[in-house]
Image (cartoon, rainbow, N blue to C red; front, side, top):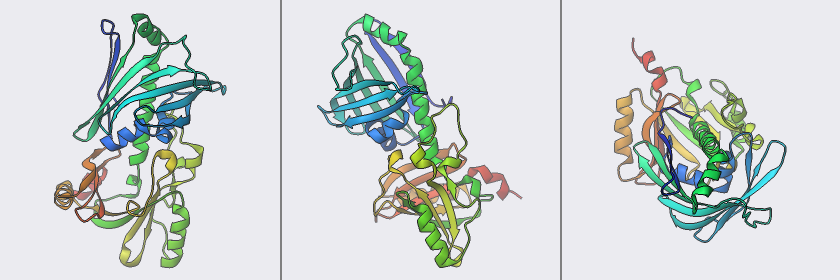
Amino acid sequence: MNPNLLFDFSVNRESKTINVKREFAANIKLVWDCWTKPELLDLWWAPKPYQTKTKSMDFREGGSWFYAMIGPNGAKHWCRADYKKIEPQKNFSGLDAFCDEEGNINADFPRSFWTNSFSASTDKTIVDIVIKYEELEDLEKIIQLGFKEGFTAAMGNLDQYFETQFKLRNELRTDNKARVCTYLNFPGNTEEAFLFYKSVFQTEFSGNGIQRFGDLPADSDHPPIAEAVKNMVIHIELPITGNHILMGTDAPREMGFTVTQGNNMHISLEPETKDEAKRIFEELSAGGNITMPLQDMFWGAYFGSFSDKYGINWMVNYNTKNENSNQV
């Protein structure tokens, strides 16, 4: 878990509640999606060495999420969450339970009533969680089952997911010379597309060539990248006409992306200074829609993205990792 992110866990036996306040280094839309889309929940909800596998999900008031926690020996522990109230990107509540494979609730274990509230905090998102029980004995039983340890580990999984999304291209930059690039998103066929572009422009890939999700170093504190994603491209660069740089990445559904015509291309600006990055971002995004606020990122960049008032997608990326290289 990132020690720089807010994490507060407390138990109030008088009100029979568990209270968790957790900060994440991502915008509120992405954090909300990670709590409400089954393909994303499956990536982080279970603490290692367990995995989550959704059987069905209907995220609406009156709907439910039906899933299994799968142990290292393959044993499945079935659970369900019944949604009560939903305010998109603000809060949702629901009643969870252990159950059998058919969804019948196991009365031997207490049910928990969750209320999850989401709020933006400058460049981060805070999730405020209140879990209430009918009886104090129910609360004590959940704590004895290791809820705090398991839930803490699961939120660490979510941190790693965000880190993976934002780790794109720092290894390729050795200076901060200004440049303009075109950034392309593909649903899984980036390599095919860039081999085609390479044959047309008769140039070679820059830097480290084709970088894949599977090339990311293993982290024992986080779950492994899904097998279906490992061979996909996390970043690639190709110089084309006039030394313009074409960049690309796969945006797999397994990681919660949906590529459409409209969100599959960005103009990527890489200014020489941080002040210039800030000026361009503020002026160009005026009247538009900011999708990622301009902020310092853990991978060593000052980064943000938006669509301008004409619907054109932009990225602004200043590489703070190489600031000293500009000083002579």
